[in-house]
Amino acid sequence: MPDFLSKLIDDAQKRIYAGYYSVLETVEHQPISLKSAIKSAKNNAIIAEIKPISPVRGPLRPEIDAEDTAIKLERGGATGLSVLTEPDNFGGSIESLRKVRRRVSIPLLMKDIVVDKTQIQAAKRYGADCILLIESVFSKHPAMPLDELLQFAHESNLEVLLETHNKHELDRALKSEADIIGVNNRNLATLEIDLLTTTRLLENLTDRGDKTIISESGIETSADIRKLRHVALDGFLIGSSLMLSDDLEGKIREFVLA
Image (cartoon, rainbow, N blue to C red; front, side, top):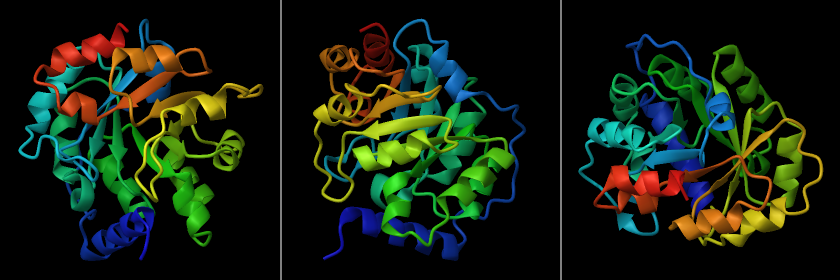
């Protein structure tokens, strides 16, 4: 039985072939650096994720109003927004990216399983400032050109968040041209979360160069942020715990000020 990451890759390829990312409209937008926004944050730099469905928890906000959610998260102090455009497993929508871009002035990350230039072109046309690339996608399928997609994103004036899950991936990411490195506490093959993943990978990191590093997944409370803050971190990406809150603005502010 294929692991969940293999399913994500297969689903992404099917969407590409079906024309899901072949958007024609272009949103006029002057790029905003997510990396710079993280580095210059006065408090905790939080990338808040607009995530309707969790593959583990199920529906979070399945009938989500992405624009209203984005406005509340920006008002609560989010440094940037991660917009799920992956529809099959996370309930995301490429249209949500376009709609959110027109309503907020903070950087947007297009969150998807990106394996093709068509997806990067869609991100650019709909106003993203940054795209997600997942290191294990390209480790699992070496024929997929990580460096080529990273270069294409930069040529499109998009930053890249390169997600890692273990020391080997982190070492490769640190040598890459990625703008931001994410340490994901979730194992994408099994979907298990271990918040100590960030600590294990970063507590003895001596040479990070000028890389911006964030922790992703499994952050539920302000206490979790305080536990992680002692390692070499610049920010946090938080999704499910925000989406389950009845007070989006208050919850994001709680994380920002933790």
